[in-house]
Length: 176
Image (cartoon, rainbow, N blue to C red; front, side, top):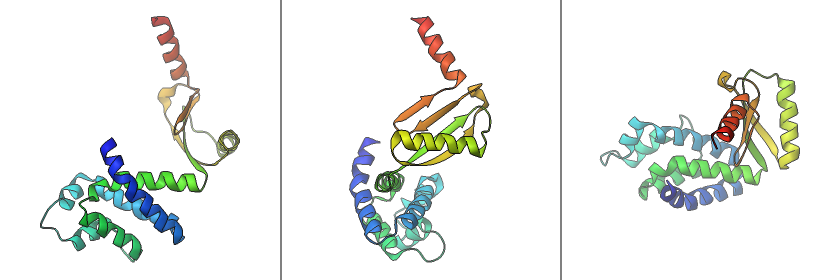
């Protein structure tokens, strides 16, 4: 995994610079999401690695229907020439991280025991924006196994305010 990230990093940086310089960050994010999803599919992965499949056919699999950005197509072509199409998921993830850093955005997943309303989600988002000094893109999920409370996953910071988490911490403390 770390080897794949090491190999993917220069490609992600180059793609990010090209997309940023052309004002195409949002569209490249969408294109990368599509290409990475295809590259992650087991059936597509075996096709992409097949030596008899032409480069155009490989690109046809990785590009969404319609007119794709010619620079993105050329980028994928470069990956194909260098035998790096398998790195697309890592490149896409690194590209998104660079974009979030550039746009001062933090992706947060809020998992709660019960569904929360929009007002509460907005209040939590505002609080996180103040704490981290970034705009927040929040995704809400429901997990009844939390019993009560919520878990906020903000990348490197996880705030576990769930009853399940408190029970685990109590169990660990009693086991010592």
